[in-house]
Structures are given as C-alpha cells and as structure tokens.
Length: 280
Image 1 (tube, rainbow, N blue to C red):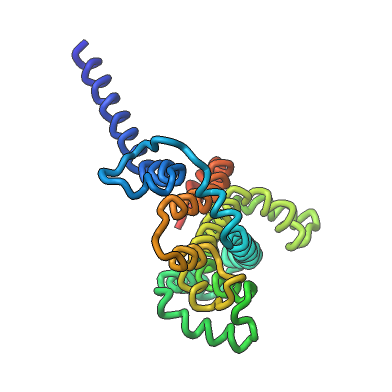
Image 2: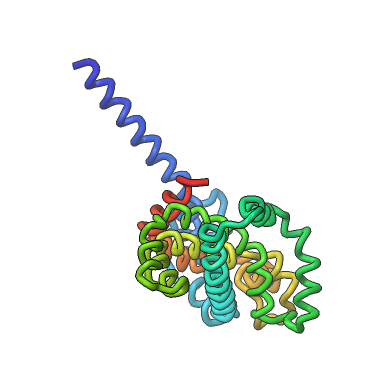
C-alpha cells in the first residue's frame, strides 16, 4: 500500500513538473497575446496588469492596415518557401548520393559539410554578399534565397543523410533487378519512405529562413523587399514611442503561421527527428 502511494506521489510530482515547464515556456507567448489585446494606455500603467481591463483588436487593425506588415509577411513567406524548396531539392539528391554511392572520403566529406553549418554567420556574410553582388542579385529576394541556402543546406543535408541511412536498401536492389532506373526508384520508392524526414527537414529550413535577420538586414535595402525580422524593427523605429501593443501583435502574427505548421505536421516532425537520430 505504501509503495503504491509513493508511486502515485512520484507520478503526480512528475506531472506537476511537466505542467510547470509548459507554463514557463508558454508564458511569454501568453503575455504577448494579452498585451496585444490591450488598449495603448493600458500597456503603460504601473504596476503592470496582466489581464486587460478591456479587450480590443485595435493593434491588429493598425498593424495590418496602417503599416507594411502584410508586405513584409509576404516577403518572408516567399523567401522561406523558396529557400525550403531549393534546400530540399539539393539536399535530398545530395543525401541520397552520400548514402548510396560509395567513394573514398565520403564520411569526411559529410563531416565537412556539417562543419560549415557551425561557422558563424558574421564570418561568411561578407564573401556571400560579394558573390551575390557580382551575380547582380543584391537587393533581391532571389539573392536572399541563395544566401539563406548557404547556411540552411549543410545541416539539412546532414539530417537527410542520417535518415536515408535508416532506409532499407533491399527494396531498391530488388527494383534495380526488375529493371527500374536509379532516378525512377528514387522518386517512386525512396522519397515516399523518406517523407517524415523530408517534412522534418523542411520545417527546420522554413523556420530558419523565416526568422533570419542578419543577411536580410545587410542584403536588402528597399523597404518594399524587407522581411519581417528586419521590417518590424523598422516599423517600431519610425515611431516616436514604442507602442507595445502593436509590437506584441506583430509577435503573435509572426509566430502564428509557424506554430500552425508545426502543430499540423507534428507527427512527421517527431518521427523524422526520431529516426534520424538513431544513426550516425
């Protein structure tokens, strides 16, 4: 009887710790949501009231109709989606080649690719800027997509490589015996099996590109082509005072699309990361 009480108490304690962790993690987002629903005057009161005395969507209306938020959001989505597609095309082909074609130095090459991911952005930003400028793509979203690919691709390639290593090669060998081409079995057999890893990698790449600040700040000069991380800062600095309800509304709207995508693809995300971490 005593042991059962101890087990139940331990379980209740663990559940309490989990909910405490969830609350601590969710508190900043909850604070941002409540602040975005406050009138401007309520954000300047002291002591600070957590719960608004009255709810209003004025900050969202101002943000969407009186600022460049929508244009900035579309720019960020275009750049993030473009980067994700380019990384997936190159990453899946590269990872498949590293796992299916045996050649001297393959492991060293894969490790070198991952090493490039750990290089600080401040080291590679100048040579990438010079390259993009020579290609005539400075101050363009296309140039931004190419620059984001340089630091998103190495980790995506490594992650996809780990996932491809877990896929059985016997099915591919049987298909080759039946006369299937290498390209045909890649699209018809390998990609469907690798879908969880591809989705997990695409989410990672999308989030990195969607939230990137440094390259966008340096490479883009036109206000109409700025992305959200840079443009939001620009909107705030143009005001004589910081309107915290608008800032928090922008934070909520920036986070919402990523949150929706992650929640809707959670099953693939967990399986993709789980399988990929079993090898390597």
